[in-house]
Structure formats: structure tokens, C-alpha cells
Length: 272
Image (tube, rainbow, N blue to C red):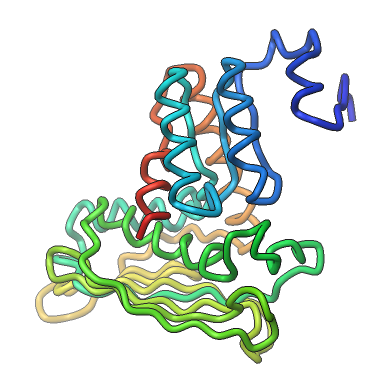
């Protein structure tokens, strides 16, 4: 596949001549390795894109952000659902007040866990279960869509139905500033057929729904469908999300665009 060189460790890569031509490192390893790998990369003068969650603990997340500041490096976290074409379009509708004042977001992600991700059930490696894997994603989407309101209170319930070490299902209820409520349900183990991802946004003048995208606005006492005609398949949405995420990061590394999903944002979410 035209890969010029491979390495079995980041230290070996950074010690090789090829490292001189590298501007950035993409960290896609288990969560317990994120902090040491990110620090090594930033100390070597490389910008970093790290997969979610940023770290196992709030302390580790803060250390990573502090390292980025110390060495003047760009640190971005892979919250790829922000970069789905449908969620990006939904954010535009919200910012243009097409739904009026948003007061409630209801969401969920029920996903069967892959056997290749067994490390996620090991507390020392993952830092937690489905809340870190899926819950942070759903919370991040809500905060991003609403332009980062402050979190006032969080209530949650979690369950260990099939895992002894970490939670495999959970639900939480969040109150945000501006009299906005956010709820989500997340699970690796709910007894249902197939995966299910949804996000419903309710405003005082309309509503919008993700997966599939649908936007409704009240005009003259009637609900009008504002959904764009062009639709993406689930596969194309998934692919586009990663393509857009990588494009944002590369442009940020080049200095021609914002990072999006910054390390600072991720550290703040991790501390909730």
C-alpha cells in the first residue's frame, strides 16, 4: 500500500530520519497509552490528533493540555460525530435560530461492542465503560450544537449487566445554562437488534432529528419540512465524518483553519 516504513513503537519512529518530515501524529491506541504517546509526540515538536476519549481521567487530560501549551503544539481530539454532514448542517440550522430557542435535546447510542475492543472492559486500560466510549460523544455533540453552555447539574444511572469491571449501560440527565435539558441513553448490551444512534433537538419554534436528518419549523401555525433534499447513506455519513475530521486537523496543522474539538474542550468535558 505504498507505506515507506513501519515501526513497532513511537520512540522508534521519532528516533528515525523519517521523523524530521513529520508534522503531526494521529494516536489511535487504547486510552491508557494516550497520555505518554501524546507527550512524547509534542515534546518532539509534533501536533497531535488523539482518539476519544482524550484520557482515562481528568488529571491525565489536563496534563496533556498543559503539555500542548508548554510546547506550543496543536492538540485535537477525534470527536468525529461533530463532523458528520448531517450534524454540521443541524448546527447551522440551530445557529440561524430556525428552531427558535432550543430547550431540550434527547439522544442515545445503543451499539453492540466489537470483540476487538475487549480492552475497553478493562478499567486500567479504558478508564471506564460505555460512558467514556459513547456517553462523552453524545454530551459533546449537545454542547457543541449549543455553542458550549455551562453544565449546571448531572444525574446518572449506570449498570454492569455483562461486565464486572466497567458499566455497559447508562443513562444521564443534564441541566445546562439557559434552561436547557439534555438526556442520553447509551449501551453496549441493550437487548435489541442492531445498532441505534439518534439525536432529537426541540426548540420553541421547531424541531430537528438526526439519523436520518429531518428539520421541521413552525411557519404560520403549521410545521414546514426544511430538510434538504440530498440525503447521505449511513455508510457515507460515517466515511464523511472521518474525512472531514482529518481535513480540519490537517488544515489546522498547516495553519489555515481552526482545530475544532480541542484538547481544552475535551479536558473540560472529562472533568464533569
